[in-house]
Length: 282
Image (cartoon, rainbow, N blue to C red; front, side, top):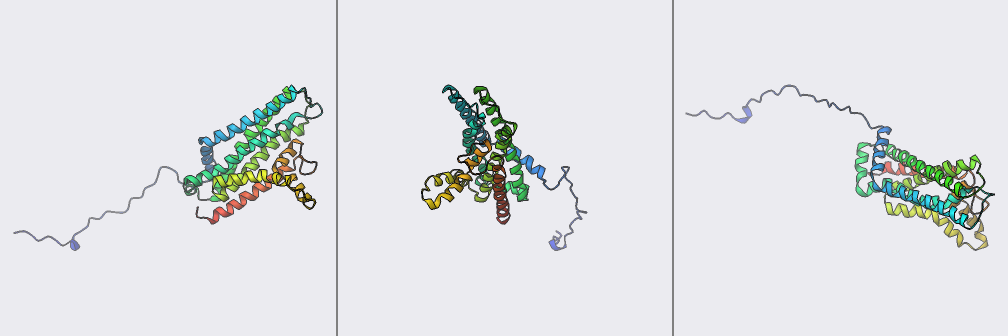
């Protein structure tokens, strides 16, 4: 005779004992700015865009600077009354397009691939993420631009028998130019964070660089002469020329004056980017 099965409601469940706590051997702590900087450095040095854009920039600065000096020398020209640093202007101006592109891609590529979600999950502080990107990107651009500008200026001095530039001119033509181009790159980074579309942000930045001069060329009316002069004076090519001591017209920022103007624009763009990032879901 079989014993009837005990109903489930009356079955005894063995005591599992107190819950076992687990402690990870890996220390867990909030992400810091140093962690974010290390992460961004890993990103920027591991993508091909960095190598291509900065590589093309270096080639443009070296090629145009040296060719300009060789052409002046071949024509028997002499710039004994002026320093040779101004010959590096055109190479830096074209190379700045590469910096603009890299600045936008530094954050725009993360939006296009969706990597920005992973970045913000690992480091929820959006201002900290943008600051880390700014520190890594601007430092890299500053070093590359300054070193290349110094090499170009030295080669041009060897090719041409020009008057030695004062120390202040050398400092503006190398370190000053490096800081200016790095600030221009930060402006691009801020615009890229606001727009979140690489092609659109690059188009906007190229317009910022070239459009004021293009518009000024077609302002023939007398009542537009003031606006025309303003657009030329504060155009980015003219400000860059001011660091070399060779502006398009006699007025406008010169010497070190273009640098705080560009730094102010970059700070405004990055501040707006932080405000907008904090209001968006992603």
